Image (cartoon, rainbow, N blue to C red; front, side, top):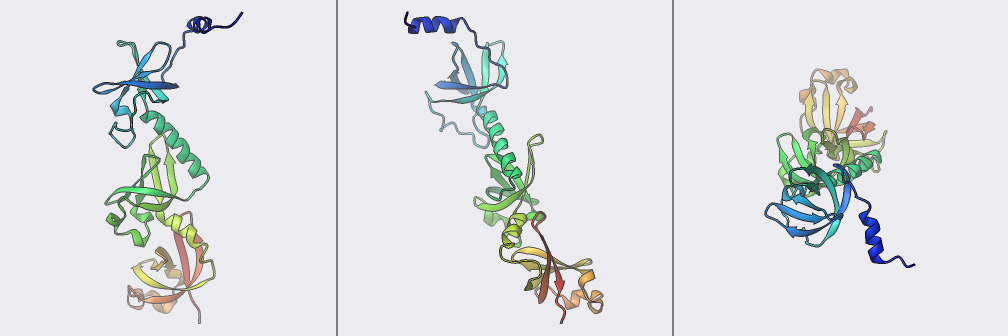
Length: 256
């Protein structure tokens, strides 16, 4: 005896599919309402997708197409309306963090899109998740932060914590790692003084701060560093250490 569509429907009706908060389900948007969309999720059930749950970083609903089938996250169950509340934003958030954690685990260097800046650094976006590059992890060429807004910047992950929604990256670490293809420990290099501190001199080596610690400075200079190593002066140095994890370079003075 053939298995007709009618018999198949009868079999399906014997099973009542139960949806739970946190489930990921497929559905088809079939109607736009004032504040959201109605979604056919099967089992003679219509879910509700609020417009506030569409995007992580955008508020427009122009990209939503009627009769388009896609996956949704079950955000809640409205018992009074007997309706499931759905979210695209939450699903995107989960999948974005999965990709970010994978990239961090693989120690990937990537380009992040710069959305803005504040006194502390650059506001960036990766996989629609907002992140931050502190000033202390920007290269000297990026100190004029406004010039980088709406552009991409090379960076590496420092912190990627989904629980606290904390995403912190470093431009200096990415550039330092790239520099390791050009310079190595023991190389002689000429660099310009950019800052004099009580603990040493900072030089600009390919836009990365390179520290000449005061212990590396000859005794004759240690008490007169500000005069001997004036800002802008160029000195011959030896690369002593390159730390791509912190975006730092250590140097020593050459010995004649």
